[in-house]
Length: 349
Ligand code: DOR
Ligand code: ZN
Image (tube, rainbow, N blue to C red; front, side, top):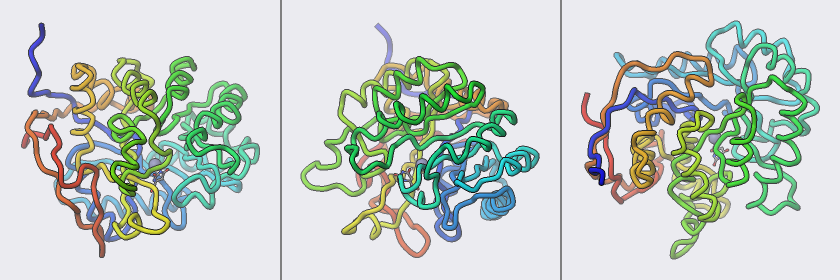
């Protein structure tokens, strides 16, 4: 017999995959992340994309400028890989000390991936430079081939692109971002320690039925798309396994409500408002709360070669109601679980 745990104190977590956007929209979403996480890997898919060290440092300055005074939060910047990225850019990025990874979007795979990589062979010299610099490659692992079923795009990407890539670059560190399938979990588990994966709250909590519950549900649409229950269970097993290859990355991806409730709705779920609380639900349901700290606060830092956070946060099992919408620049957005309850909250510091 074991008692139900109703409070949990862990080192302050980090979010290893986050979309912050820019301008007034960023001003509204950043406080949600900064209230929970010490650091976040900030995605570079702005319009135009963050392709150079100079652009990344300017973006970092804009993030720091809107942080409330006294907030301790460190944005960890990334570069957006294109067919034209120069190997010399990697040395510049490394030297900056502020850029921690390079993001690989297959061209057209998702939101603002239009400038992404058309053929990874074009980037081999850059990947060699990254390998040498110890700079991780963060992968959006989906093929864009329209002949491949949308639910199979991650599995096929592993076979066609990822497996050959990590074979060719034997020292390249790779994070397979937001994995959604049992095949991805198995692949990462069986790969060398330099290969890791992030897991989102939505792929741990929902299966693809959530896209069609009583009607089409645009706020549950993200990429890679939600998968079958058998995959969700495999992801929960990976996240709660204590294997340091698997760590937290919310992929919180804010979009204005009208752009999702639309004839051609945008991909992305907003989870930053409950970016640690939703994972607490997952780990509690799996009777694995004792493993949340490794997943949320330790393994990612270890992988990136950064110090673990020493400050603590306390989570309480105390339900709260998520608002129907939250401000998003001139618009509003609909957060995950809008109008319903989340079981955990963070205790006031
Ligand atoms: O659903 C998604 N939204 N997946 C991505 O890969 C990008 C993200 C976004 O930027 O909105
Ligand atoms: Zn993302």
